[in-house]
Length: 304
Image (tube, rainbow, N blue to C red; front, side, top):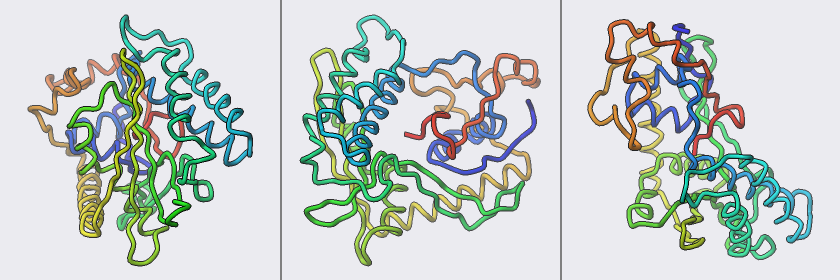
């Protein structure tokens, strides 16, 4: 369990974990340690099921050419299957019933047959790879940065390339709207879309479609996202510098502890605190299971 293994590919989740704390990155992605029976939050579970429903609806309409009404039926069926038998905490709004209502409400807000944003070829849950200018420290093969966007689309009115991303929330605060301005996941999406699909001299734009689910009902908002050429180049430069630091840490088997605020986030202590506060972390390995995050495989975690 103590053997270190450098990831096959890098994604935004790994970058966030590296920035949070190199020790956290090492434990989660190089050792694959995960707390046993650690269930994902109901919010993430709900969001994953919502995404499954929207994907199924789009595939039914754009790929299978089903009528809208049948596509929405396919969407609710897929969402319910993904949600499964999970029971949310008392008075929590992320219930199965609200999930199905939210899926139907989404397609009423943005009807499939009226949406000007149409997926490019294979643009639904579009997976992409960017080759990095350094090699994997173990295999010697080029490292890649990868991601998966909800939809890579073309605006039928303007012919522009647009990255569409759905986000669920309990409520839409001012901070929710502003946090996308510097979001690295979206910047990576826009970097790829701009360099590969956008017309020369153009930059791709992003569109976040928010689905708010609370006790008061279901709301929808949209946020347009833009990045300048300078911001895209800056993201690429910083990404490469940090991945170089990752490789160096792996080769030296030396991962710094960030300490401070990194040890407590999302209203809970870091799951590796017990390993960082003892000279013999091996004594606690039995409390973890080995479950490597692999961004090249679907349904093994999620990089949203």
